[in-house]
Image (cartoon, rainbow, N blue to C red; front, side, top):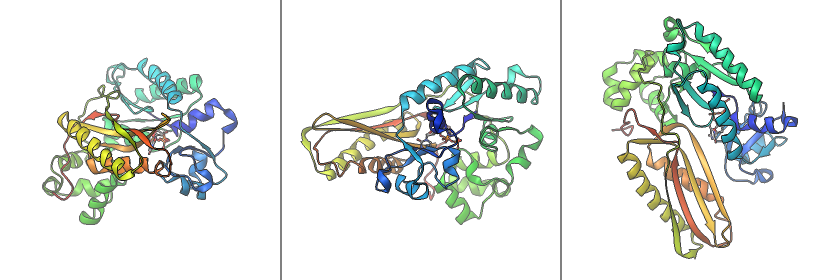
Amino acid sequence: MDMDAFYASCEVVRNPDLSGKPVIIGADPKEGKGRGVVATSSYEARKFGVRSGMPISRAYKLCPQGIYLRPDFKFYREISSEIMKILRSYSKIGEQWGLDESFLDMTQFVTNFADSVEIAQKIKDEIYAKLKLTSSIGIGPNKQVAKIASGFQKPNGLTYVPPDQVQSFLDPLSVDEIIGVGPKTKKVLNEKLQIFTIADLANYPAEKLNKMFGKMGVYLHNVARGMDNSPVQQIYKRKSLGSEVTFEEDIDNFDTIYKTLELLVDKLHKLLLSKNYLYQNIAIKIRFENFSTFTRQHRLKTPTNDKKVALQIGKQLLKEFESNPKKIRLLGFRFAELSKAKYVQKTLFD
Ligand code: TTP
C-alpha cells in the first residue's frame, strides 16, 4: 500500500479548498529565486511537469500558479500513524516504509490470491472513509511484485498480479521499477549492457550480472524473473544515526561548515556500515548565533548506503543557509529511515 501524493494530500485534508488545485510541498519558491527542492506535489501539479526532488525554482517556472507549502512533518506523522493503525487491523505482519508505504503479509487470511483483492478494496475504502485520503495497493506473490503493482495505476489504484502473470507483468517495465535500481544503476544497465526493460534483464546471463554487480547482480537476476523471498518484517523505521557539533566559537566560514559536515558524515557512515544499515533519509540541522534553528531533510527514492550521496545531499541542504549573515553555532547531520541491508552492493565499476 502506498498513499497517493502523501504530503500534498494531507494538506488537502486539512484545507479542502486546496482540492483539485496544484499543491506543491517543499522549499519556499521565493517567486522563482528560492532554493531547495520539491518534496512532493498533487497530481494536478504533476500535470505541469512538477516532480519530487526537482529544484523548487524549476517547479515555480513550470507552475507559477501552484500553491506552495512548507512541509509539516508532525501533521503527516499523525496521519501516518492513523493509516498504519488501520493496516494493522488487517494484518499484524506489516513492514512500514517511510510514512506512507507498507507491505502486508496476507497469507494467513486468504485461501487464494483473488481473495486479497476484496480485502485490498476494503482497506482502501476504510482509509478513505476515515481520513479522506486515497491510496494505491498492489497485490502479488512477493514484495517486489506487490510494490511495483502498487505504483502501476496511481492514483487510487488497485492492481492484482496473479502468480502466473508475474513475468508478463514485469517484462515490459523499465529496470528502474525494481527496488534498489536508482539512476546510477539504471545508467550502467542501459548504457553498458543495453538492458532497458525487466525482460532484457531477465534474459541477460546471470554470471555476467554477478561479475559486474556482485550480490546485487544475483538479486537483479532473481527479481527480473519474479523471484523475491524477502519476508515482510518490521524494519528499523524509527532508528536513525545522528550527531551534532557545537563550535567552540560561532563561525561564519562555510568552508569550515562543509569540512565539519564531511567529518560528521564520515563518522556516521562508518557506524552505518558497521551496523549493516541502509538509509533513505538525510537530515541536517543548523543553529545560528541567536539560537534560531533550522532542519532540512531529503528523502531518497530507494534506500542506500552510499557515502558520496550523503555528503552531496548534506551540502545541498546546507546551501540555502550560505547567504545567511548570522554566525553559526551548531551543525548536525542524521541518517534516518534506516533499514537492514539485504545485499551489499559493490561500487558499480568494481
Ligand atoms: P512517495 O510515496 O514516493 O510519493 P508520494 O506519496 O508523494 O506520491 P505517489 O506515491 O502518489 O507518486 O513519497 C512519500 C512522501 O515522501 C511524499 O509525499 C513526500 C516525501 N518525499 C520527499 O520528501 N522527497 C522525495 O524525493 C520523495 C520521492 C518523497
